[in-house]
Structures are given as structure tokens and as C-alpha cells.
Length: 313
Image (cartoon, rainbow, N blue to C red; front, side, top):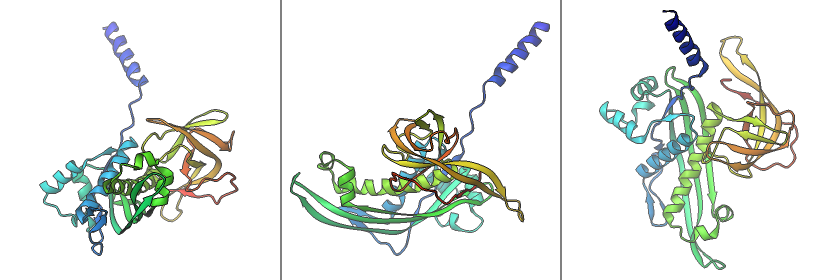
């Protein structure tokens, strides 16, 4: 009996020694609806109908968020099955008070809903003398408004809008001519939706699971964000330290935490599950767990910035 007791105690302590992995929240991206005033848009011979635009963007956003490894993402097939089995229409989740019900049906912790209210593309053929290419000169504008909703409470975690603009001269700088030589209109269509979904996905991740420092040396840091989730070599981030959480004195609601900028880093390599960055400024001040916010433009010299507040922290 004594031996059994000892074995049970040993098993208990061994089990306690291994921390259970954190449960990943489940997220469902509902089809983004195209504004009724927008008709069929053409990229070369490719006709982008309402259905194509709505499904393509939603699918790209699902893929982007899945690569972050922060959420268990429901697939389009799973979402469509639940909608069909419960005889729901796409207007259902737009009705007040229905988000909680939709979340329960999908067994999702977070729901992402949105609308595409601007989608304009102009394409003019252009001869590239040096490479011999004949490519469409694209000027595209894509605007989407979206919400991230916590289905258990119906609380809006994030409400934002993103305007993506793509010009042909930008593509020439970003994509080698050897690769673009064989592109068709379909490739430009894919790139448009990928870029737009990436911007929306980055906004969602920055609010719920921002990029964080997980290892520090004297001149370098390692970040918990890897390939395919918005980080690229040469991108810069401002590093902010999370201050004390603040609470609304009237309602008791958490107002998030005060943020103080402590440095600037530049991404030097992007691996499968993490990235490496060089410390541009703030060596000695950057700490484990500090938040990194992508900068829209590269800054060689940084002055003081107005501090911000991170909701939910």
C-alpha cells in the first residue's frame, strides 16, 4: 500500500511538472459582403463578381490568420455547413443580438465580420522596353470595414477599416521582372486580395496577439512571429513596454495598459515560426515580452512619440 501511495505521489508531481499548453481560441471569418453599389470589376480578362470578391477576400484572410498559429481557424467548408444546416442567410449575423447565437452555432470564441465598400481597379497595357514585357498597369483601391466580436459576450474587441492601394510601379520594385514575366491577370488578382487580407489580418493580430520579443541579446532580438504573417526582412517595428493596466473609475471596465516606446528594431530574417531583428535603438531598455508594432515607413532616426494605450491589457 505504501509503495502504491509513493507511486501515485510521484505520478502527480511528474504530471504537475509539465505545463499544459495554452488553449488556442477558435475564430470564424464570416464572408465579407460587397457593397450593393459595387458591380463586377475586371482585371484584364478576369471578371471579379460579387461572389468571387467576397469569398476570395475571406479565404485569404482565413489563410493569413491560420499562419499566425494563434487561432484555431474554422474553414469555409465548416462555416458553410453550419449556415446550411441551420438555414441561415448572410443577413442573419448582421441583425442585432444574433452574434452570440452565431458564435455558439459555430463553436467560435471570436467572429470576424465585415463589408467591402470600395473596390476599384483600372488597368492599362504598358510595354516594358527593357524586358520585352507587355503588362497591365494596375491602380487598385480596396477598402474594407470590419469588426472582431467576442461571441460569448457580444463585445466588439476591434472595429477598424483598412484602405489598400496598389500601383504598378510599386510591384516593379517589390517583384523581380524575371518572376513577373509569366504573370497573367489572375496573378494580379491574387496579389490584390492577398495584400488587402494581410493588412486586415495584421490589424486583427496587433489587437489580440501583437508581435512580442521572446529573446534578447546585446544587439539582436527574436520575435514570436514567423513567415507569411506580415513580417518581412527590412521591416521596422517600434518596441513598446506595457505599463500598469488602467480601469474606468465609473464602470470598472479595463481600459488597457499604458504603452511607453523603448526602442526600434529592424527585421533581418524571417523563419517558419519566429523572426530575428537587429536593435536600431533602445539597446538595454528592450525587455522580454515587450510589444512590437510595425512601422508603415522606415525611420532611421526616431524621436519621442506620443504614448498609446493597448485595449484589453
